[in-house]
Amino acid sequence: MPTVTVTVSATGRITCTPDPVPVSGADQTISFVLETSTYRFPTANAVVVKTAPNSQFPQPAQTEATQLVTLFDANTDALTYDYTVRVVRKSDNAELELDPSIENGK
Image: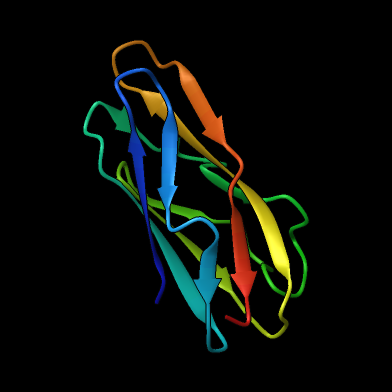
């Protein structure tokens, strides 16, 4: 199960590690773990694959907790998919986003 570490700098810059996310093996769940405690994931649309739903990402990502989002990836091709990750600053509910990618078949 691939894991993406999401951090936010003091200046509000989001970083996703790794980027791109290499995914190998069919039927994988990608976990996104937010490690900056002053931010949280929104309850909806925290991670959105830009071309989903499609056969690779048939379901929307699920916000499991304020610091954890999961995304099912069928991973039956070898294509790259762009996605948007969104976080919310707890102090004022300001939303930030970044557009990294997922590499299937890696």
